[in-house]
Image (cartoon, rainbow, N blue to C red; front, side, top):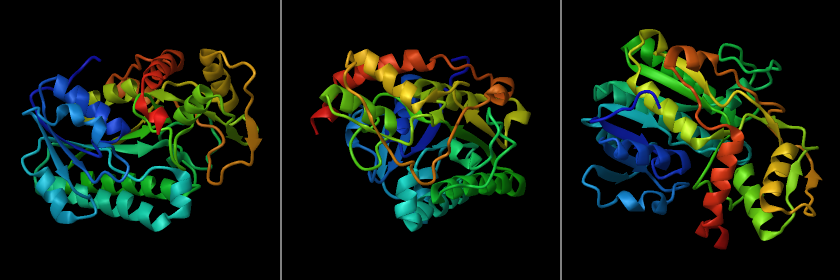
Length: 326
């Protein structure tokens, strides 16, 4: 990483989650005070367990849907990394109201609290789902289509609210459109598990997996340490042009689901274990491949982990994880 935030008081919402806990680890390692706000609906206590006795760490168990909780969490804070959200396209299709309440109402509560408490900068997790039905590849920040799921609607709404708060109240905001982030601590269990941990768990257990569609759907899979890097860069940027912008956070490449399966299969030497092909998943974008030129130019983003390096480190972690015994 080129620039690291240090000696600051930083609130990480959703800090017990997969991405949030990696941010917490890095912030504490670089001499920051960190407050985590999490309701543990999807986050896990074990992700932050190692920090509970750290004097620079504090935990607020609460919900971003409660305005008073947001105000309390933002008090005296320099910066906010807003990671709290209800993820998953299928979850949003099954329960659009819950997704809206967390991702829209909760987001607006956090923006209001950040404004009222004088927070210096608000960096938030946006999503590649915002590109919707726009056909062009690679995905460029300024060219988006219509959303294909309630989840995508909520994440685009976040961008609109953030833009308005920047222009109306002068709040410094940066949105980071994450592209299929993967790495250690991503839960392979449950109905809404992401594809990489799900594939790894199945391969390790010698079980067949179902690939949605014919395997040609492709994604710009992004290792979590690249996400940590760009959050640091967003917090420390002195370039005024970089503010009130959204950025793709990816590696600038794409891998089909079948290619992904084969790469994981090769790591486990399970050549005889073949996938099942099922129906396409409702609300899914067909291809997701990002241009990272804007983040490179305005933030100095340079991903340190390509897909191959990231997937090896991820498999190594899962091989020693208790998540497989659940």
